[in-house]
Length: 480
Image (cartoon, rainbow, N blue to C red):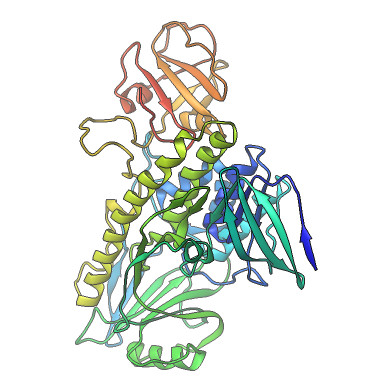
């Protein structure tokens, strides 16, 4: 069977992990017909990327999934360290930070990746779009007006014509390989880690654990509790090349913990991880784009990989929408903005991995740089407190009826936002732009406005009367 299908799909996404799902949601909420396919026959069922960084939580707020993610997940656990079987103290990878008016979600949130993906799939389904499993991208060709792709499913093939193709299909990306884009970096076969999801009934699931020998306290096993059940994510160094199994995990826990009461069971996911740190030379070739692991592969140190992919999607979605509406000028900025970020984040992850391998005492500590709140698309030559390319801060304000809302509430959705500070003439309405005047208590303004009762909005944007700020749909400042 060879079916030539002429449907109305405008964007085809291959790969239904967090990156592909986030992009599909962003496009679907803009009423752009999208298909998302995955060659897997079943949805992924492991924890893998279980740390959701603060900036990703802000993206999830905008995409309408934050409440579900908060309900399903948990804060980062306190880790209990045992050296040579003796309790050695407690620590956190990062100390909790209090929310501020500008940063409402300052701390990492823990949720197994498969649970995050399920929440994203449910949100996507609200727009009438479902992941097409057991559907593989066989080949594609592009021309000046679109991409013709051949898909394999149900024992046959289907030919589809779309405006754009996005490869969110992982480190072994078919899209990237078909394009012949070099995947620059290295694989270090001298380092191997065994990762898996297991149960350990003898351990208190409210805590994480670090077990190591007394002589080498930085070489050991980590067990981090996974929300929504009794499992832990297990991470341990491997000295020999073995297939992951419950028996191998048990041998490692016996070696490092020295506690016969800790019996592992219910191994639901396991993998051997090798440092494979790579960055695609290009993120775009004509009408075809790379995002997530297809564009950059990270070590798990620092919890950056999944988060960086989701933000690729968040950057690309509104630009594809603009292109489909007739303005292709923004598409080039996807690669220039996101490849720069990916290169920087790879450097952070690699530095943390090197510390872990070297046994540095601060190898498990996480600093400000892992929260991804300081990611910026500004010109490196620019200097300033808050300028184009920077993340748009949040702030509490009140609406016309006097009800408390936040700037993030104004930004939420597929539109750009224009904020005019101070009592001044409301800007001329523009299509796809929501305009508000931000005033202080006692001032009056025509048109839609909000009141900055405590001055947090003026402070966050270093605004004076007459300041005009444009916020892109992805929550970064556009040029004033």
